[in-house]
Image (cartoon, rainbow, N blue to C red; front, top):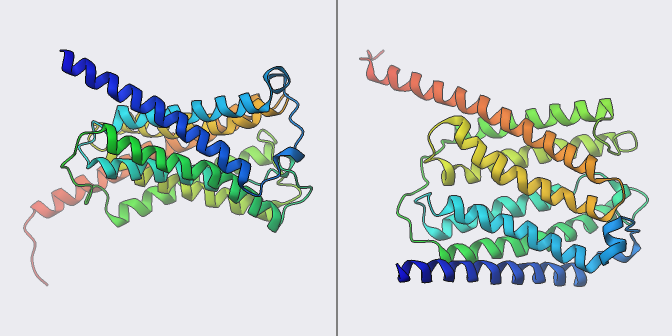
Length: 298
């Protein structure tokens, strides 16, 4: 009993220390990278009350704490080798931040127009989040997870992976396009229609790829809905909402829009994942039945 308690305490301490170090690393990266944050006018009541540094540190701690929680909750039950769990979670979150940061919302940047400077700036901002979160997931997996034995090969075939990416990308693109057309989702689509639609297609594909990367971690869960609840809603969805919520913490009156757009994004991916998994399940069942029947050579 004492041994179990000591082990649990050790895991908690490692998680807390790693989250704090990763948050500090992200702050340092953003401070040294060529990203002129001081040119932005942060006018939220929270920034006025406690200051930008406190808001930024609190945000990174909360964001990385969620990454640590889902890694511990789902990674230890996956049966996969611990470093594989680490790189899968790390790559998934890093890709969300790198591609998500390229969203064409020039108003939230120091620039007046979209262009090479905007893309480079957003890349460095995304890298400042992506590198620490990848390191966080690898360190936590190595130090806190038990060695796994189950291999991830064969969990999804190439055809299945392509189908998942395609369906999720199409669902995300359709949802965002409707949001842009109805002005439900605020964007710069009128000023930059080509760039906005290109990013929407790219990020939709990135979300599908993230789903494929994380799928082996959750594939032991039975049932399409249960799997997608854990993978899409509890892992990707909440993290994407936290990531978008940072803008709402900095600018006055923006939080409802950030929560709405990230909530709609999550809902679209969730529904798409249920649909495509049902199709793949039916397809697999049909293939098994066909394979069990005697065939005649032509």
